[in-house]
Amino acid sequence: MRPGALVELEANLKALNLSRVARNLEVLLRQAKEAGIGCEEFLLELTHAELQARAESRLNRRIKEAKFPLLKPLESFDFEAVPDLDMRLFRQLVEGEYIHERRNVIFLGRSGTGKTHMATALGMEACRKNYRTRFVTCYGLVNELVEARQERLLQRL
Image (cartoon, rainbow, N blue to C red; front, side):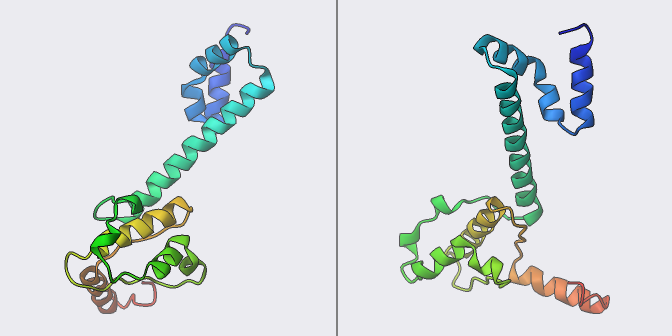
């Protein structure tokens, strides 16, 4: 590589909003050279790494924006603790059809039955499917509705 080409390449990558690749460029170039990877394969690996990093960032951003009270994935839910749970319905919810149908999901039940855990798990699944979601408690929703009504912003909520 000609002198200054690496610096110029890093600047170009940053200008193209590929700063993650730019940060790791020297390491990636060395690894490609050691492995004897050609230009096409190297560029393919580079784009895969960038796409994966962007997908992870997008998922993390969506989870943060959702304002989940805790991060509990579906895999950690104890379904045996809630014998009355309609598993067929819950599996349908996990698939996300309610999103396409533009339907809300509300969990009702006694304290300690896993409502927050299930709602968070469903929300995280929606985030993984690249949807935006928002967690809100009943109390929080009522407060927001009252505030919006007082400020005459109810249509926007």
